[in-house]
Image (tube, rainbow, N blue to C red; front, side):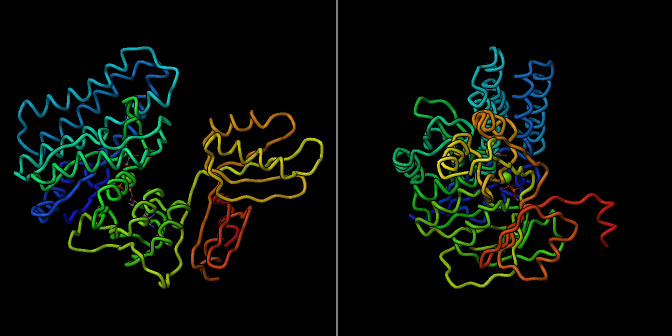
Length: 431
Ligand code: ADP
Ligand code: ASP
Ligand code: MG
């Protein structure tokens, strides 16, 4: 069976116009077998995070925040098509799952509760898409991805149990495709083997599409975006970016590893392992191929810049002037792994070790506490990690303008810097 996996992110379903556009894209593929993975509408995940926060703080805003989410979904449906009572009931019934959680006292495991609440965003957006496709007479079925993707119970960052997920995909998705051309399901969420909802980490819907592509042996995977494809830099930061028409899996995994926000970093491995081509395509220009990521080998690339903001540089040193020896390093790394602090850059001297990590204050605090009394830690915040692949000296000079460089490392084709942006006045003085 020829099969495509499509992923529509939050930006593509942010309003009724977005859903109409998705419907129009799908109508061009009505005779093809497609599994459609959809993210929560627009900024719904952020809004649900606010509900969780308010619930844990036990302030009086929780129900108001939830009602706003209900209203935005119902209003979108009313804008999109004349919905029957069943459709509105379906949305309200889905939100009841959150109301049940909110009736109880906050559970001691914040991450567990977070997943039970935040996962509702994808259930809502996918249900709306399912109903809308029915309304358009597009032959489709809605599937709860939690019956397919089974994970461990690392809430908010769940790991896939591949064997069972693969069995589920084959036994619960493929038979449906015998009668339906399209299947609509959710990105970002899964289920633990005890049947609790889990999430795969923020922006995880791309990864869901890759998991399903892998498990179903898809012929291609397509991520529909609000950009022409993968660009040489984030267009929100840089004016002069160009589209990369073709990328190798290796280049794509390097870019996403360093923080290119266009694709979730875990996406590439599953599709590379089965050599499935990935198209990053503009939803506003569906006839364009966008960027094709595949098994290319000898491509040459222009300079590509990736900026990861909100970095912390942790300077760890021994209290008694003893060397930072291998056994210290191994203990430090074990703690970094324990608190899931990703090492973005590092350096050591005789009595100190410095490491650049994503600034996640609660995990850094726990890490520091567990380091114990033999070490002292100073942390530098508000930093950027700048990665330039395929650099040239001009680009490098340009990127260093108005920045204080704290760390720099040059490899053959990559330069990385941890930098602080200088305040505006300083920038002027430098010109
Ligand atoms: P969605 O969640 O709708 O799938 P995202 O907002 O997560 O989409 O990702 C698309 C955004 O990624 C773009 O709007 C763009 O601002 C940003 N982006 C960052 N780096 C790049 C890059 N190198 N190429 C293209 N887009 C990028
Ligand atoms: N809705 C989730 C998020 O905003 C997952 C995704 O969009 O990929 O993080
Ligand atoms: Mg996204």
